[in-house]
Image (cartoon, rainbow, N blue to C red; front, side, top):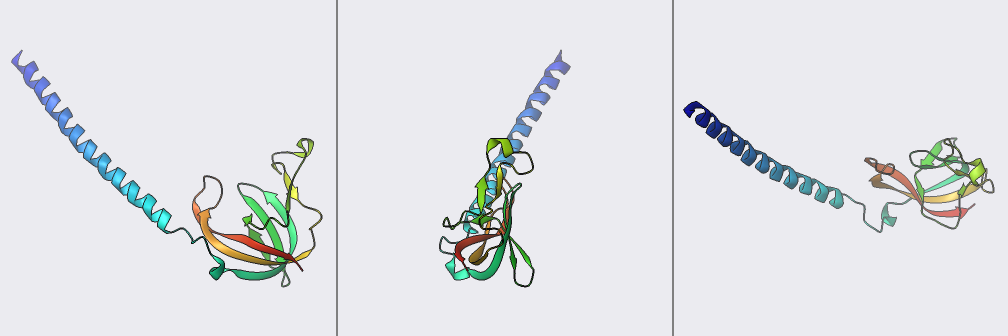
Length: 149
């Protein structure tokens, strides 16, 4: 009987010891996680990123929707440019398709045929933001201003 009591006491002490160590580890993990989320907030681009903007003259060639949107342009040298966003609402390069034309490949979106093959002066920036919804942070190209050439 005495052996069972000693075993029970040992078991209780061991459980208590692991509980204390586990909670301090959780506290440390929570603290590290809070520090990491703070670092992500500090790395965001400033709201006014016009200082870092660049210019490009290019022809609109395609819009596709995959894990993210892709506004595709081609410059005079033949280089293809893939922009993740277009913040300028004066030109709708992407159009939503009717339900009967929607499938897994196009995800209900297509290029606006009215702008295909036309040249534009684009102002764009690179921003650190999610590469796609719920995706990792990445430096992506974002169109901030569009003018028909």
